[in-house]
Length: 96
Image (cartoon, rainbow, N blue to C red; front, side, top):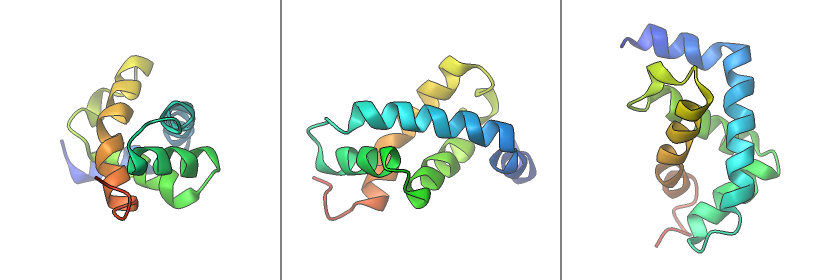
């Protein structure tokens, strides 16, 4: 695990497209979440807020399973695992 490898993943356009689509799919689910910060991030991602989407991508690229997200299920799991942290960072006024 190196920063260079994480940086390469973060800037790989085909991987970013996969991560964006995964985040958007999860955003639709999380918009109905009862936790305000989780739902706010979901709405932002669904609406196409580039900062929200980039925050999720950056978290996935630096998360504990970043090196195994070539499979869709691993990417989904990584996205779900970082969502609460990203939501709290992006929407602290909404966090419980």
